[in-house]
Length: 147
Image 1 (cartoon, one colour):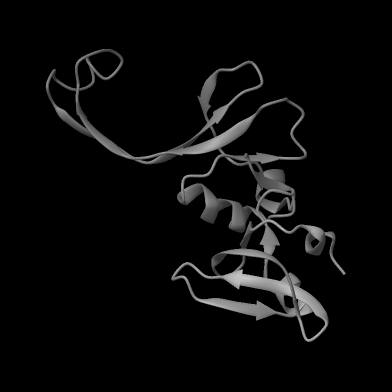
Image 2 (cartoon, rainbow, N blue to C red):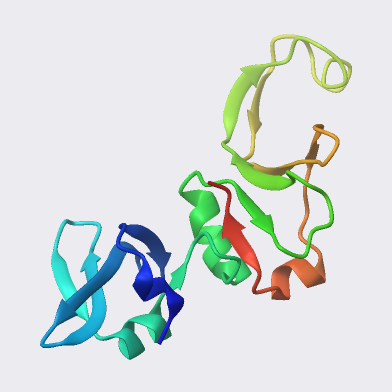
């Protein structure tokens, strides 16, 4: 049985949906009280729940799960990253008018530019840089939401 069942607080899990859940007893079985995004509540036996969902904050998410959380506005990190306080985050798209280099010189001043959504990283040094996933990042199962 999972150590997650010992926590009485509502925590965030991800599977086919992002849900809130906490330990709950039904018919003398310790399972999960699950609250779905629409507010519906149910009880789930531990085996079924733990096969379908992963905690978002304990370094067990796949990159696919991490990407879902990233799109929901979460900051994410990996247990496998060496730098302290490193995380990635989604920068939403925007529209702005060119008014400074390097775009000034490529486009005339005042040209409207659509800046596409992208992922940036806060580095261990505190800088922010564009980020592209490596093969290791894509295949890793040690992603977690920064809380």
